[in-house]
Image 1 (cartoon, rainbow, N blue to C red):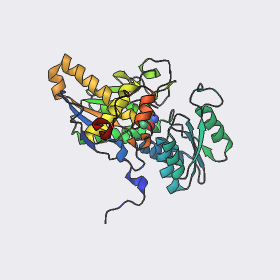
Image 2 (cartoon, rainbow, N blue to C red):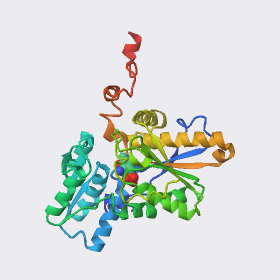
Image 3 (cartoon, helix red, strand yellow):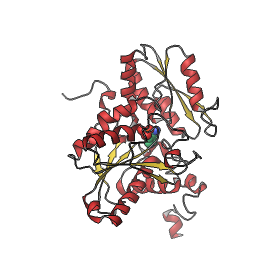
Image 4 (cartoon, rainbow, N blue to C red):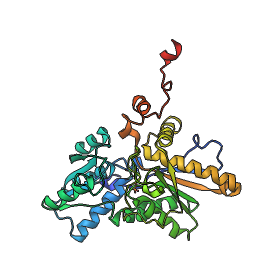
Length: 337
Ligand code: PMP
């Protein structure tokens, strides 16, 4: 019989799928790595598993301990999955821009959720960084994985995501595109692909316009899970060869196209990463058609669209920000009236 002893054993080993519709007119082979196939529904299961196992090994996390983390949801789900098996309590702190759906998911897994305001500086006492620091210190047995600074975040990608991409493309990958949040994915996966290919693989970061990685001042944007208003140490800025900034409007438009045209119901940071991928592929094709034809570009899709049904996939919400023209989203009855 073939079975896992616990759902957390099924983290990683996600598939690649070719994008064939949104890539019309492009000659490069564009492959999406579908991270919502992880048991917790996102790429963050990988770092959760590695960070917990490393903290147990180092003695930072003791039996019966409490995991306290500022997380936009996905890291929380991964941590909650692993914590359940091992008997840890979980307390998660998330900014109020994070959707109600995502908070409900964390609570469903048995975690406690503390919500903090988005529009305060990171060093403000009510910021989600400050609140989580205080809780981790004051709860007995508290341990903060701190995905923004934990080397085991990038390490998990160096050990799993990178090798999976290399193996599944039989070493033919030429480019990696991934969104940058904590920077763990791009740092670990990009570093592995650089190392294994002797620097041949080009690593491209996708970033919300306004975020620091693409030269912004940290002004707010709506795409969740990516971009920052400070420089996390999990991010090694020497890894990306290029960073491409994408607006909320373009990120969300592409997110909706991925669901409608590719059957990929994914989150906003996925649309952002694919938009950056297509721009890069278009430019490469204009500048060097032969290189574009030979290119195998892997883009990482971090999570599922299920957590964004009331936002990106809700016409009213999209119209309220001007992301959808007033006449879009008409019903059949509207049209035939
Ligand atoms: N997209 C989503 C939806 C995420 O939750 C995250 C993690 N913050 C990322 C992208 C970016 O990954 P990383 O933190 O590894 O840079």
